[in-house]
Length: 108
Picture 1 (spheres, rainbow, N blue to C red):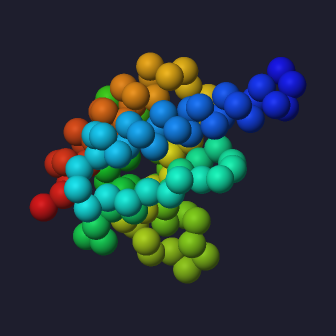
Picture 2: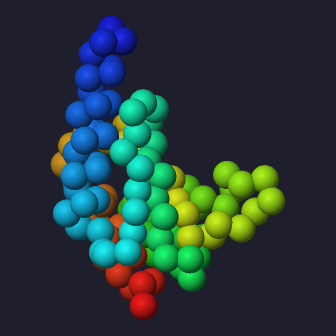
């Protein structure tokens, strides 16, 4: 595919993921709206450990990367990174819905 088509595809998927997160994620969760790249950064309330949450999400066939690995001194277990580049539209929406259900179990 030409780069222009890839960029258009990633933009469409980014928009779809961000719109789906706005619609389905519980209150108290923030995320970036990237200008480029393949990922969005998500922050949950500070008491949430996304390493624990990852196993529950994986049981529903949803994967994300816990955020603590992106900090040289560790910590920030309440963060996660989501990739929107390699899934078709319907799977992006379904994945966000499933992840939202998992998140609700971790929010007080």
